[in-house]
Length: 254
Image (cartoon, rainbow, N blue to C red; front, side):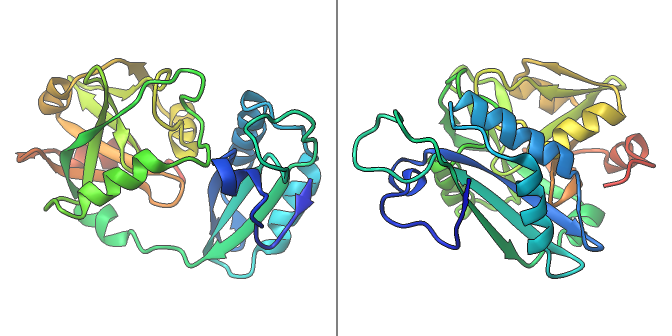
């Protein structure tokens, strides 16, 4: 795999969004949940038929990129560089781009909770790509554009059948009658690293859910690798119990 500073115009990711990425939180100089991030990249590359790469070398490159005790590292893998045309045939050298950024401050969200609305934009269904954090994020761009026009902090996103999937940049979980649930991501959405981690730490059931399930829920949360767990204080005008979120995940280290 080639490690480059910036893509050129022949890069498949630049041309077609042909690749995948993961966004890692660095805490106290350590890449948090790196094993899950690496697993995501390996399994995603396999699903997209991207040539295998050396995971030890990638891990070393990420460690080398850490330059602050707390920051964000983004690892983007492209199928590689090639001439024009969609066909991936013969492209055997993936390209990797590692960048860093300041860690956003989510402390207010974590302490005070957030308000959720419902997006008008709906996700397409594509089982072959469902769960992957591939480099074509046009759906999320349009959802974020919608969010800027709304007086809420985040938007619940549905698919074409009106099933609840996620929010614009995080996964979603909710508590109903004392049991915790999260939407299945076999038709749309991103299977986030924090979602995967939390499901190993607590009993959380996957399923297909509607907006009515969220309205009837006692508590909701959103989660991703950077923000950790953020409780929802209000959904579609309904107050939600943030303390249930804190109690359920008490003792889980983010």
